[in-house]
Amino acid sequence: GRNIEMPVFEALNVETLPLRLGQNTMLLQRLGEDWGSWKVREVGDGNLNLVFIVEGSAGSAIVKQALPYVRLVGESWPLPLKRSFFEYHALTRQAARDPGRVPEVFHFDGEQAIIVMEFLAPHIILRRGLIEGNQYPNAARDLGQFLARTLFRGSDFSMKAAARKADVALFADNVELCDITESLVFSDPYFNAPLNRHTAPQLDGLVAALRADRDLKVEAQRLKHLFATKAEALLHGDLHTGSVMVTPGETRVIDPEFAFYGPIAFDVGMLLANFWMNYLAQQGHERDDNRRDMRGYLLEAVVTIWETFRSEFSHLWRTERSGILYQRALFEDQDDSLGAEQALDEVLHDIWQDMLGFAGIEMHRRILGLAHNADFELIEDPDLRARCETKALKFGRHLACNRRHIHSLAEVNGLVERLEKE
Ligand code: SR1
Ligand code: MG
Image 1 (tube, protein in one colour):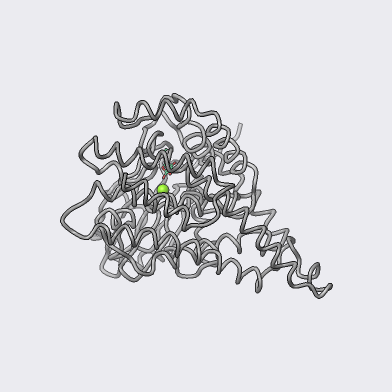
Image 2 (cartoon, protein in one colour; image 1 turned 135 degrees about the vertical axis):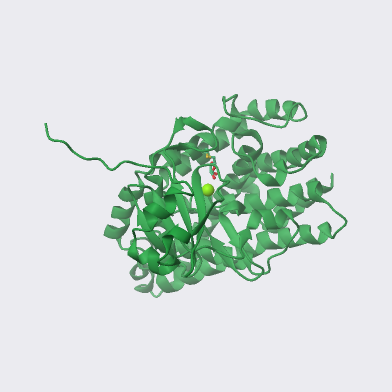
């Protein structure tokens, strides 16, 4: 038989990185010709990948490389390198749909699963900033716009049908990352799955009650049903506050390796859930400063994200609706512009109800599943941590099970405020 030479994947390290990337003329221009003197640091602390900062005489870059397994768990959980391909393609689409909001990509190597991109400095991860008690005046507006622009422009409301169908097929192959979400978010928290962990024994009673809660489990599966089948728009797919980098004035969204065509409400709900969790964790990070002020900021941020999403989505609906859904001709021929507004209200109403459900489930998985978040994890006193987590679990259950009867964010924020004071 013929010998087919397969490219050999090699995980980078600080020594081998300049050897590999120093062959690329464009990167030499960006970072400096003298690749032997590039300064390389490994900085990745995420669940899945390697991340390096590279600094040369001419500039700097981030080098992100997927590993053939889940870094958090190890080689026992294989994960394909192709997630890097999906991240690269999601970044290019997001850059076109909301210019300036994602890092610029300098170079992509699919065989080695490497993306070289803009090093964001002095940005920090939004989650960390919020835990430290910092407020970011533009972040909520920027994120609301990002949601509306990437989701509307990545859907059948806007895209040409052939381009969208080809893209749905392309991203449909991101099977393993969808599987992570389908298992870790929608199922594992609700039974005694092997990778689950929670603050024990303080939460044991509530965890048992949630796992015996038939209505909650059915609702979680209805949401999973939506996630798996409603190929509505190209999602970021993992839009929590760890996927956002900020300065006091600037907001960037990173890390869309979970991208696929799913329900718009999933991205919106996951993001709001992470603001609500940070709100409920603030008590655990209290110093002598003004945490009440921080809590007010977080609830306002939730309102701003949602209101900006609604108004930007509505604006795009009125000005850019060029896809196969709710065509203009259907309504305008009859001189009935109210028809398009009625349809918009229906679409937003569905997103609202589903968003609340996804938010509830996201809170549960961060406390009961494998992948926890620093907001609660960094609370040193286990009793206090468990009290904060208990509130989030109850709040999550309420949102998931009552989402069809909740009518405003004032209602939701009022509820979380009362819970927080308990
Ligand atoms: C095994 S991966 C666990 C989590 O990390 C990612 O950031 C996603 O949120 C995923 O669910
Ligand atoms: Mg990530």
